[in-house]
Image 1 (spheres, helix red, strand yellow):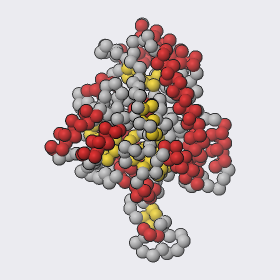
Image 2 (cartoon, protein in one colour; image 1 turned 45 degrees about the horizontal axis):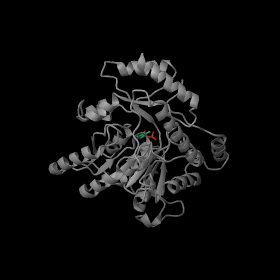
Image 3 (cartoon, helix red, strand yellow; image 1 turned 135 degrees about the vertical axis):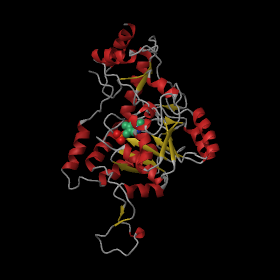
Image 4 (cartoon, helix red, strand yellow; image 1 turned 180 degrees about the vertical axis):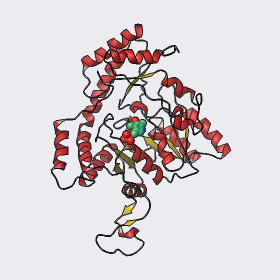
Length: 386
Ligand SMILES: *Cc1c(COP(=O)(O)O)cnc(C)c1O
């Protein structure tokens, strides 16, 4: 089976992890700082804080932004559940903004319409989480203009978008947002096994996130409420979590960062090649815009299944039985039972629901061979014609 995604681990990656295993320190330490420096340097972000997952990163960024009970966080329904769950960890409420039917990213028109209504009703969001679906950057400049006008913070869920370019800068540089989160889960752009990172240009937030990732504990005497008892002393100054990344994971992450340019180049080559191979196939290939460049975490096409019942399921099964592990991204979050209990229902976000019935992610990863890609396209044509 050709999978839809797969990590690439080199001998250098393995050696980097083994070096840590042979050293005196395994938990968060110097390797973590190196990894943070590698990612912040690459993106041009002021600060980076490595944590155990992107989910943890989203949670801590929301806490640093002051998201609390009574507040609202808005995100896209076409995402992994973590983009929304972070609000609820903080006791805040979630709402969604419908997507652009072409890119699958939050639609600026829908966002503006919803903001106008929310302002009238006195329930403007505190935080909006745009998701760069498949690695294709959202309309951040337009979102920034709305954020300045309506007073919300922008937290980018860039779990797919490490290496993507937007208006001449890297996603993660914070040019149009308040913080950005990356994921280093095995199928993402680079991996540390599990892992995530918060990027921000706010030094006060970075410092608070560092404390929060380790139980809310500090050893900085300037923050103590009484004089230090001695060199061993620390204080828990607020309730935090244990969200640290190990040095084994960080070493893998740093090693993978060195390979990111190569990963991006290959994915861009494969995306161009898919566009060509699918030129005469009745599917919609991914959108491109001159002012931004996708990282191509996913290669998502749209297939019109004509509304026939189970056509999409039959297609999925037929492709799998031909050895092509396609994937569907994403089940709209508002349709999850746990979100239905929050009052959401079918029909609430029609573009998101329509996209879910059409979107198909084709295999896309560094080690995908051209002959695999030819096979994917041949099988796709055959199954669509059957
Ligand atoms: C993978 C992913 C996450 C969660 O990442 P973890 O590192 O597994 O916590 C969040 N949002 C999106 C869009 C993702 O794809």
